[in-house]
Amino acid sequence: MKTLVKVLLAAAVWAGGTVHGATVKDREGAVRGDKSAMENDARWIYNDVERGFAEAKKTGKPLLVVLRCVPCLSCVGLDAEVLKEPAITPLLDQFVCVRLINANTIDLARFQFDYDLSFSTLFFNADGTIYGRYGSWVHQADPEAKETIGYRRALEAALVVHRGYPANAAALAGKQGGPTPFRTPVEIPALASKYGRELNWSGNVVQSCVHCHQVGEAFRTYYRDKGEPVPLERIFPMPAAETVGLSLAPDQVATVTLVAAGSPAEQAGFRPGDELVTLGGQPLLSIADFSWVLHRAPDAAKLAAVVKRAGRDVALTLALPEGWRIKTAISKRVGTWAMRAMASGGLVLEDLDDAARQARGLGREGLALLVKGMGQFNKHGTAKKVGFLKDDVVVTFGDIAARANEGEVIGRLLTTTKIGDSVDVTVLRGTERVTLKLPMQ
Image (cartoon, rainbow, N blue to C red; front, top):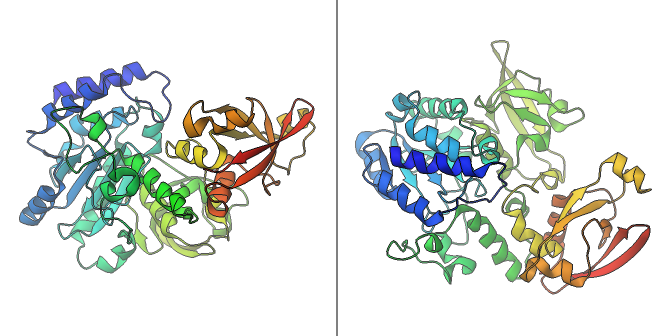
């Protein structure tokens, strides 16, 4: 255990001001160090989820499965604390604990979570019923973040659900994963030709490992290669509560800290201090559970919510307007990098604020996306190849001329274009407007 913690903390120190998708210097050493420290650990079942289910069935305990991308620098602090934090130990004692370090053969109908996170947890009954999910974007953004209060709250909530099972099974129906076109990641075409079912411990183990974010990327490539629109839930997975106007405290299950003016949440009557008990009929274990309800929600849906306010339960209805999902912020997700190649030839775009628009003589309501950067190679170098320059301002992108953020543009292009199509893009370059033809990939 001490060896693993040293490896993880050393990576965090090296990180400094890391960005999403950054990795430790010695990726191979980190994975092998994790195996050495964990494969004979008294608490954690290492990389064997079926053994975990069998143990849960034998003991009657709920099953906790941590999916940890060891080479990824994000969530290093949280991972280390979960493994050694004394305050968590008595809670973990009440679970069968499994640590998965690769996604090669996970059951995709069962393991549906935020694939862009490098540390996630799913809570199960031994019969496979999902109690809930945990995943933290606070820790994803900062590898030195070590706060575990939110994680403890999720463990406590999962134990409450377990004690109520199976009488509460009906309320858990919406938490279960839906059908997928492939049973495991290594059956998805984009991954099948590169990865096997087993890790290559005798060779380069990192190159044999399917990372969770690759699952989302492979699904998007599957639809794109078939000439079909990429489903919106694949482009905008696990929408954050902010998408509907709520900010939730990271150290609680789902407690409202802020309600955005004019948002669906404000219209529903949410208030700061509200503790969300259920959403869409589902008991919430964490902020990730809130995102899961949104993930499965259709357009123009009405979600029943129960909040605890001043000691009493209050019923609310969250009405999701048509097109709500495309407002989800995705620019900081690691999975968006691959979508940039498909939709914008590798451009990294940022919506200009009102002051910057005014300085350039642009109005508030029109499209104005600053080219902050662009890829240099292969598909990510396409925009550069056709003539885009850093600091160009995109003012029309095909038929998109109204104000939109990068995610909205990506979403519209991946649902309306096919590989081989070309889109006319007009940019403001200084005082000149230049139109470039960008191929869709």
